[in-house]
Length: 115
Length: 121
Image 1 (spheres, chains in turn blue, cyan):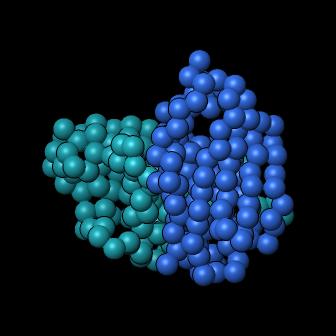
Image 2: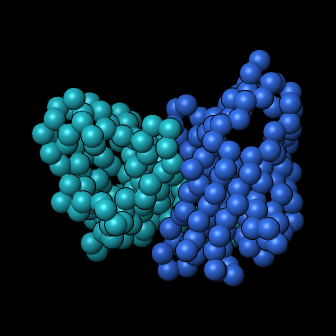
Image 3: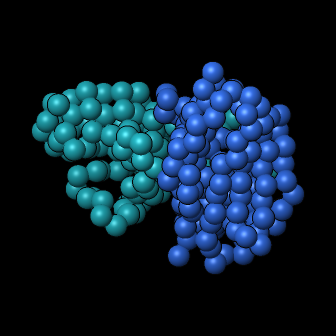
């Protein structure tokens, strides 16, 4: 069965600290997509990144970086020099692939960045 | 591009009434739309998959007669919560899939609406 695990329920850091949000997934598909979304208090999901199963290159976008490792089925997200505006709930999601196109969401990690 | 809107943003209704939530893809045609429900401090739970011109496919445990879904056009899907009760109070989010994505997108990608907060008194 397909599954996404975000073991960290809530993380608190002080501004300017680096923080890594973990995401571990399970799937039997060889082709799949992984996503990260940010959900601020307003509720609207903000797309952060998409990664397909054949692209294991790590990605950096400003203060954000992602580490995709198929060997450990992990797709971790790091925020460097965190800011108060980063406070939100972050969801990792796995696409079930062609046919259903459903997303499996993790339970989310609530990040609190303290000034 | 790939914008999805929802209306209303929030709604308060009395117990026993029905509430309709609209989900629109503004700049693409969506053959498939999804409806999610999110309780406070919880993850998104997929309720149903809505396919244009056909009946919705509901996830296990979701009452079809309670949550009516209509996807009558390629840009509009509606969710009607019938005879709403306080336990139906939740944040409802829709998403849409573009079946003909441009080169910088993928078939699997969903675009999410801003959500509708429903409170049933």
